[in-house]
Image 1 (tube, rainbow, N blue to C red):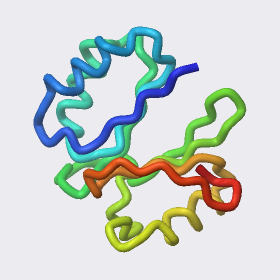
Image 2 (cartoon, one colour):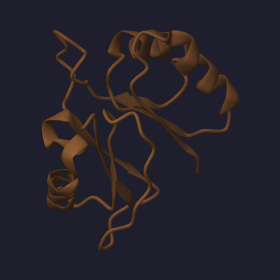
Image 3 (cartoon, rainbow, N blue to C red):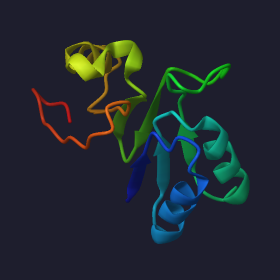
Image 4 (cartoon, helix red, strand yellow):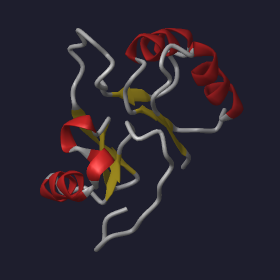
Length: 123
């Protein structure tokens, strides 16, 4: 199973569209906020794709969730934009919330920096 995670598109619909086209085998697309309008447009263009998203700090007026959980191949994934967990200052709050939710994977955006870690059983 392939999961594609993207975030912080900030009005760049073309970038999101290209990602989906380049990943035709992906089973799940997770959007981590700051570009909700273009994410909604993307969902309209690809209604057959499984897509879930959350709002970011630049998604003003959004009623989308701040975080969500999804199960994929028996793995619980906690995903959020991250601003309400202060991820620019560290991931401790985020990891605690993900663990409390029973997640094995925690995903966040907001920092505009890629990061992969494994901390005490949590990716």
